[in-house]
Picture 1: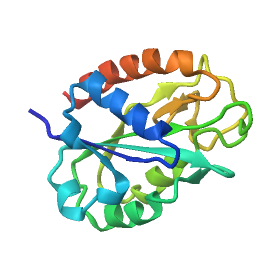
Picture 2: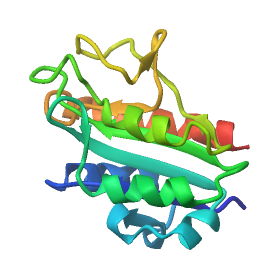
Picture 3: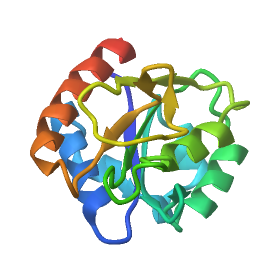
Amino acid sequence: MRKIAIYYGSTTGTCEALASMIAKALGVEDENVHSVTDMTKEAVESQDVLILGSSTWGCGDLQDDWYDGVEILKQADLQGKKVALFACGDGESYGDTFCEAMTHIKEALSASGCSFIGRVPTAGYTFTASTAVDGDEFIGLALDDVNESDKSEERITAWAQQLQEEMA
């Protein structure tokens, strides 16, 4: 059984609620869903899979609590771990930096030895640009709970199924 932890950064509660939905879809117990403010190097290193999520602020910035979290992740031994990213954004009001928070996390972990899983096709999303897009896929799960909340549950369910396969 793989040890999975979900860490989120949430200012308004949206990313926290979405992290809980992801946990439920994956069968991850509540005690393995944490605010990034509770992250420790030891806790991260004890996991096989990390699911990391952030709301996107300003011009594609990380949620504030993630700045310390990124530093903890950089110090941790992530060799051989699988990492899945998700981000919340507003594809209408901030369509040119949609869900870019996950880009910052991925870049911070680029030399860590972890492998990234959970890429999602951009088809069906409404936005204009994002550094979180590679080719025709997001580097993780993009969620617009402001304008497309009716699609969040379906997207999370599909992503959870995909992650189960990619974690195997």
